[in-house]
Amino acid sequence: MNLLQTRNYKSSAQYLICICVILIISGVCYFSKSIIGYKTVALILLMAVSILAMLFDIIPVLTAALLSALSWNFFFIPPLFTFHTESAEDLLMFFLYFFVAMVNTVLTFKIRIEEKKARDKEEKENTIKLYNTLLNSLSHELRTPIAAILSAVDVLKNNKEGISSKNQIELLNQIDIAGVRLNRQVENLLNMSRLETGILKLNIDWCDTNDLIQSILQKTNISNKKIIFEPDEKLPLFRYDRGLIEQAIHNILHNAIHYTPISAEIKINVFEENNNNVIQISDNGNGIPESELGNLFNKFYRLPKTKAGGSGLGLSIAKGFVEAHKGTIKVNNNEKGGAIFSIYLPVESSYLNQLRNE
Amino acid sequence: MKDTILIIDDEPQIRKLLEITLESNNYKVVQASTGKEGINMAANYVPELIILDLGLPDKEGHEILKELRNWYNKSIIILSVQNSEFDIVKALDNGASDYLTKPFRNAELLARIRSAIRRNQLPNLSNKLTCGNLDIDISAHTILKDGVPLKLTSTEFNLLVLLAKNEGRVLTHQYILKEIWGVGAQAETQYLRVFIGTLRKKIENNVNQPMHIITESGVGYRFA
Image (cartoon, rainbow over all chains, first blue to last red; front, side, top):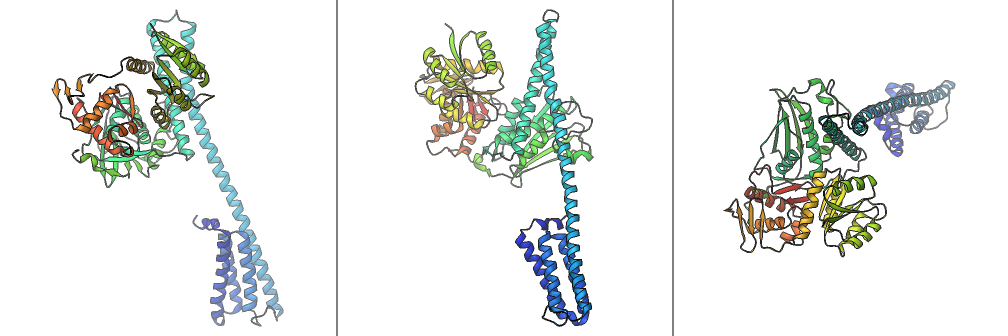
């Protein structure tokens, strides 16, 4: 694949390389022609043109082919230093050389065009596949809560006397849950499009990571899970976009709460390591199958056989937001069971908060 | 007498829901669907509180806010969509009293309205403030937590007084920095983080779950 990148060179660079290669080979052959004979030189030049044809665009290569034919005639075919050819055999050889070099160049070029077409087609198919996944996942994730809202409202409107007050409250709760879910999905989509369009502008400011985790915990609904967080009193302030990092941590935490068994315990650690602000979210649930670890942050990816709900966007958004800070996000399984998500933010820190003030 | 609330929002659905919520909580509601209409109605009714949506069709929300603030000195609560911290901070700096992001929950809305109207009606001239378990005496420069005196540095004390005087209201980072450290200190947000941290350690019962100084992510702090 490295070879293919040479085609991205500017055309002036391609011409320069093609011409230089022919001139250098001609030069080397000129001084060794007494050993190898001038007919072998033609084959060597032909080989060079063939290799150039694999690497560069057609016009620079045709130029090289033409130049090599002329150079062979001028420097190698007797009488030397003229374009004049004495024997009929040499003349035939010269035209044959010219013909083969040109055909070679054109055929190689055609093969490459076909290759590119096939690659483009494959790329297009992959994009279509991605869009289909997106549409399937979206229509499910957005329509399920809408369906819940509309049907609950229908029941409440049309059959108010027929349902017990307990069920009425239940229906209202369902509308509530659906609304919250819809809002989360819309937020995910908006965040994803912020990442995709590349217009994400970081709003960098000094942040207290302990305070950040606490405010996330206060906002998160964690009724049935135990979350342990011990602030690191010695942690310096760090400079990052609080909103984005909050969203990244929130998305990981949401998954930890949502996809672990009821009795599971979730632990959050924040610390500084090698000038990184590290945020770790670990649980003692079932962990993640080793084979799936590499796919976890992919867009729309969901673990096979997970429970319904979720668009496969949360973790890829978390990754995007962390990478926008030039940071990294990792997941691995804990030896004692459960998964560990780690965010590394290589951001500026300030130990100002450790000075006794005034 | 019922307090009048003016709603300026172009979405009929939001206006309807706000109307029902507010009327069932004993407020008188007047409505406007454009900025121009809103400014006229504010002049006619002089409501106790205005709920202003930032995304109106005819006029920039921030412009309306500025125009209102030329003469209207009661509370204005901003409604905005999520992910617009920049707009929120700008609106607060332009004189908005508080903000709510859509979607919001009614309990939150009503609490904000009550707190904003209370601030209108009790201009805070007193030298003594009481917030939950804290008693602050500004002129004597003392603070009691559950009746026990606390030792605060003068910056911590000034910060606490500024927050407490604006109880229930969000103060932006920039505003606090300007008030405490003066013009030119607005970039020094790390000082603010440090002092909020030390102040919390002294006044909060549990630093991990602050009840008095609430962080408003990306915007500022709210004292409760």
